[in-house]
Image 1: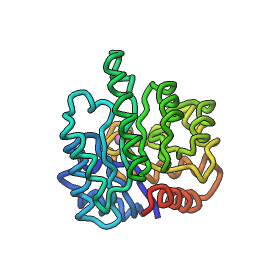
Image 2: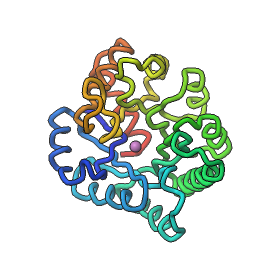
Image 3: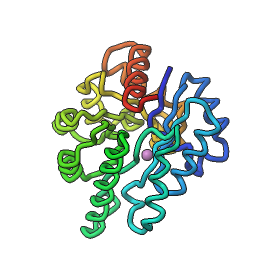
Image 4: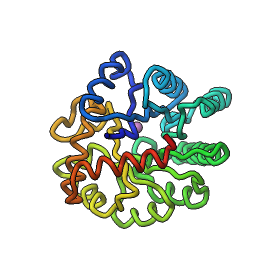
Amino acid sequence: MLFDTHCHLNDEKLLDRVDEVILDANKAGVTHFLVVGWDKESSFKAVEITEQHENVYAIIGFHPENVFDVSEEDFNETLELYKHPKVVAIGEIGLDYHWTKDPIKREIQKEYFIRQIQFANHVGMPVSIHNREAFEDCLNILKEYKPLYGGVMHCYSGSVELLEDVLKLGLYIGLDGPLTFLNAKTPKEVCEKVPLDRLLLETDCPYLAPHPLRGTINEPKNIGLILDEVARLKNLSKKHIADITSRNAKKLFHV
Ligand code: NI
């Protein structure tokens, strides 16, 4: 059993063949999926997909690149999706300084990140965190506004040193395709250091296709390539890694 804890089956690149994508993933041993929203429309689509498929759950919220012109009405309406029985977390939320350089816009990202952590705490849900080139601010916010029901640093891209801080906050570490890239030195070191009981596997499809599929449209069926690399780096069997990461996901997201 494999659990893809971060996939965008709600992305237009996959949406019109979701049934086939899920079936292909099932054939490859992927049994459970978390479909992650990034704005109002994608969050509603994520929920819609969960209604048509078993063992598919949704994460709803606003990605840091989608908070700049959201109306209060749309924001609230989206977060109210938490009441749906198949919504298991708030995300993906966070900071993205790679695409956002303007300090005023970065402040807006912080504001929505904090609001969504507070919302998750209020309704008793974990969070899925997107952090790109904003580690210091991201960690400061997480220390001040601690996610009370846990969460995952999605596609962890930080250093081995910062890993300690993230683990101290009780967060899980999500590893994706970049772990398999030939030049990925830091992610491989991170993978060796992460305690097994804090590790989650994700594809972030249709993005971040693992080596040797890099550059193609990614799908959950490719998660085995990430599993292979984790097993190699940890020097443990694939079955062991698959079992423990699935168990971690079930524990964090209560499914
Ligand atoms: Ni994502």
